[in-house]
Amino acid sequence: MLFRVIDKNEVPSLVRGFAAHYEVVGPVERNGGFAFDEVGSDPSRLRVDYDTTLLPPKKYLFPPKAELFTYDTVNNEVKDIDIPVVPRVLFGLHSCDINAINRLDAVFMASDFPDPYYRAQREATMIVGIDCTPNDHCFCNLWGTDEVTQGYDLFLHDLGDRYLVSILSVTAAEILAVATSARPASPKDSIDFQEKARAFKNSFSSGPAVYELPILMDAFYNDGLWDELGDRCLSCTACSMVCPTCYCFNMVDKLDAGGRSGARLRLWDSCCSPSFALVAGGHNFRPTAASRVRNRFYHKFLGYLSKYGNTLCTGCGRCERACKAHISPRVVIQGLQHKAVQSDAAAQGEGGRS
Amino acid sequence: MAGKKVFGLNQINPASHALEHKEAAKVAVFGLASDFGCQVQMTNIERELLDVLGMFELVYWQLVSSAPLPEDFDIAIIEGAVCTQEHVETLQWIRERAKVVIAIGACAVTGGIPGLARGNVDDFAKRVYGDVPASCGSMASPRPVSDIIAVDFTVPGCPIEPLELVAVLQRALMGGNPEAGGRSMCGDCRLNEDVCFFERGRICLGLVTRAGCGAPCIKLGYPCNGCRGLAASANLDSARDIVAGYGLDVADFDARLQIFNKAGQDSSRS
Ligand code: SF4
Ligand code: SF4
Image (cartoon, rainbow over all chains, first blue to last red; front, side, top):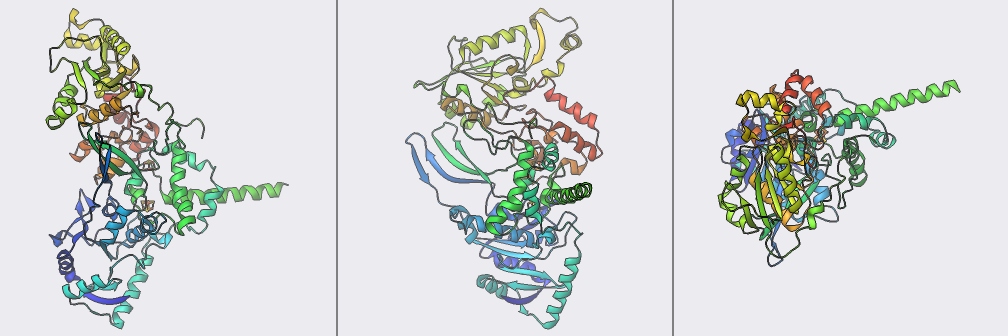
């Protein structure tokens, strides 16, 4: 790992430096919020001061709708398609979203069955991270995903008038060196960084502690909490659509208008969708909203954790904002902890009586 | 969790194996009470229309041809709400002949706009006509097609998205089940990176409306008016709490929901 310092006004020239070789995508204003979009052609659209985006940068690695292959129904032939790859820089990602991509990498790249589509685009993608200012919905601090130590090429730490740049890749280092007047970090830069980092850690609203979460998930599997949440759930799937770590998909065949050829599509899916666990024969393994909401959080807090060692949530807060029914990781954590305290009190009460 | 809304049983389509023959399937298009808007929509896919027509034999469609009503057809596409006794009899006649029935458009699927007269059709008729002419037939309270006969596939919406009908026709022709859905709309708005109307202080019926259209109205700046009918999983109690939570008028929300949901629901809806 290398460290350099650049002035803040050098960001546009850094973007242009990348844009000479790559498509550059970064946060821009959209519909009164922020969205990731192409910015290389016009770096002035880049809004490095954004809080969060409507959709996460996942859409550039794992598109909402991807054509996997096409086929001919007349001759009954499958044709492999070339995997479309766009050499791209995702510019201005926050720690939560880089951590989320690391979670996806574990599934799509490092698993027993690597996904060729994801892998091809991921290998052609560079990531430039940047410091953020948490809003009320952010709770990355609960998971430790307010910091990121791998998965990016450059990370720009905000020091007021300049950025301390952490460098993890040679290619990005070379572009940084050519596009900016990057200089070595001085002791003063490091001291300023420490102060900034401390202030950042203190800027989060306090939240529930999460260390016993997998145990609580296990203990309260049959708890009424899930019915309460299920009674509220609209089965709208908004939570999964905005989530940077959700990776479930559906496979759909789409025929052309005359039915003579078609394409197999991969579409984002959601375990909160009523048809998600519907199988051939008409049986639905999770027919109620309560069973679906429970599944979503079991996978995030326990299932993924058991397999990959992390929770499948980075506290980005997008689902907390998207869910009109106020169902969110923090609500679940608080609900479970409340249950734990209640049942503890009940147990003590029983002990006292006997 | 017993007793909660359960989704997913009875998804097997008995019609799905009905068309395993070699000749082109015969398709007939029927209109009940409607403004023919969905039928016109079907002609609005100029680019695809010839390809689509190549998949079957079109034997009856009054909007585009004067060919007389045949006795024999495989697939019936029905637009419009059931508003007269004659409609009821037509539907029974169709069901006896068709292997597959496809209801298209809000009127046929939920009763739609005609369905607003459900319960007091005589009042409405008097308001519109004064003296109700004999040519109106014997009027009946407006209902969706599925209230009268079994419906195998539905294409909801006001108007329909014609390519959605094409996809449904392909399923019918090739022996597929109706697409499983059940979810409401909000996920589609998030996919479009649109900001929620509730965050802008306005009521939107997407909370409970059957998804699948891709939320084009919201993209154009109009809140969802529920033209696809309630989602199979629609959670009205929760939606009302949400409306109230935003300080908006629950009675207004309920009144808007009536526009496309007063007459009933598509019992086969997904
Ligand atoms: S579960 Fe919610 S807060 Fe956690 S990563 Fe997904 S969208 Fe963000
Ligand atoms: S948890 Fe919330 S966002 Fe997710 S499906 Fe249910 S209502 Fe929609």
